[in-house]
Figure 1 (spheres, rainbow, N blue to C red):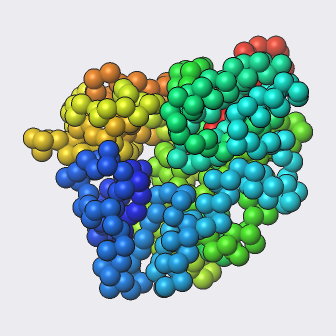
Figure 2: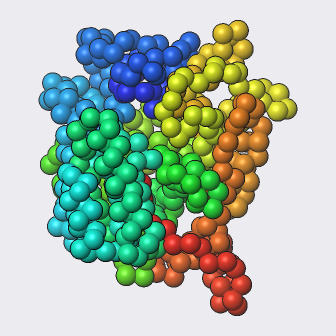
Figure 3: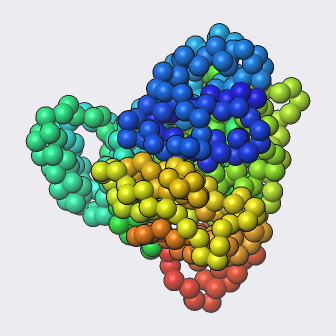
Length: 465
């Protein structure tokens, strides 16, 4: 195939490299200036004007494919499909559901799902007055895909005083910058196990099975520190039937009418009262796409073709059983966007990776090293790669991912080694007790431990992004 990638910062770098390995012709357009060196020497770049590449894609006919990384090109995607192009990414509907949190919650409520109270604001002072009149625990979420995850805040105090302090600080920072305010919401805090469910939609239907996931967004082990985009995730294509039936399946007619083609995920909080949806991701999630990819048995090119074309009679996705654990490896300035990273080379303990090891290295902000030997850091976020481990048992999948991470050598490297600990401690057991997931061996073991009074209680998850 001929594939044109369109994005802001090369977020699908690992996918592009897989497509090249599969023999597809690839060109990538990147909008942000600070990301122009990402994948240099590894992927063919075509400038910020991706529309200039449309004749190249058109000439390939059904073998031409456009892949969008973002949730703000939906209208362009709809227009391209109307012109006969094959496009994977989302749609204008998807952009609206992700960007406008209130609209997303309203749709989910209309489909019969319980939703946490969500109050929209365009002014910090009005939100502060609201909190003083109706104190409680809330989650502050910016209604813009352009805002970093570090902007969001999960309230800790029942009287809401910590949230008031955060909003006062945000108001002062905004006044000093002279920038206009960005709409945001305060969402009522819900306790439980944070669980996501996602699947590919081919324009008419979901490809099954769906994926169930557990993200780890905090910077430090034990879920401490800033909210980052993500520090690691556990995913599986098994045990998602209940989540799919109750969360994704009701969306099928809405997505069909909206011309959606791509991955869609709904993040939720699950507790004994039900499944509480929090927000949509109407695009490929990062690094979720790479972690899911190691459980997909078919090449990426075939998966993307199926999503774009909506192949008749094929509504299944060939996936492996078990768990995939993904660990995000970072360097300063992550999780903050700062001056450019020093282009340190990336080395490996025990020698260069062999083919099985390379299958679990998912490159992000890197470029070909100046000496041509391997890769080096690039970009400005400090997000060089993700490593994965796969196994039927979650504990072993975690061990494999951590063992691979330990082989990577980059100055000032940081990552979490506890991805999946909370699930193994009691998260899977709680989900099984509520009838959300099957009782795995790990869940059964944990339930037995809890009945005898052993095991630490996991801190409740919160509505966070």
